[in-house]
Image (cartoon, helix red, strand yellow):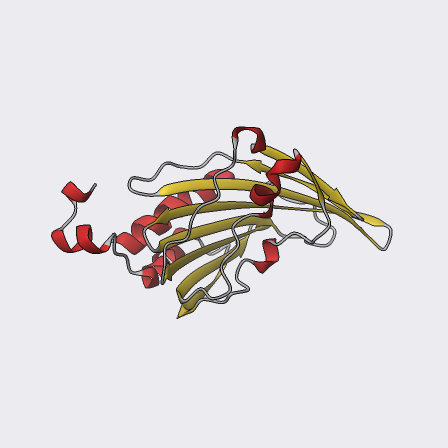
Length: 206
């Protein structure tokens, strides 16, 4: 890799412009409502929505770290930019981050490719999902399904999370169905989410 890089890039690691994640807006047609978050400081609560509550039991028991997902350090510094698109019953979010230090990826062990968990009224599954290969980046995808009971009514939510990691940069793409009253839940378009990950990485590297 270093042999193919410019001397500056080889010395300092890969470079990218996270603001260019906005370029992916062009891939969404008029049936989508698209919004943009310009470059801003990283919000430590950025991934808090994916955090699982305490007190859950995991099966296999030694897979709790993978099931919990990537947690950003509280003292993390850096910038992020994002694009969100809602339409056709789905929400896609592409986030590009540049951090002050490289973030380690949690690689699931062989026995942690699918993890079940339960506690109180909550149960669910976290499993490894197909992910595109991107030159010069580590990639990973996870499918989460959460089931809970609210006011006696069972509720199910799911989200696909795709991650590409290179140097001090990360691109995260999430895709999940929108809950629309009186309408069936739409299956997640995983092919579109995977393409969005590749497109977002390409955009910020360009």
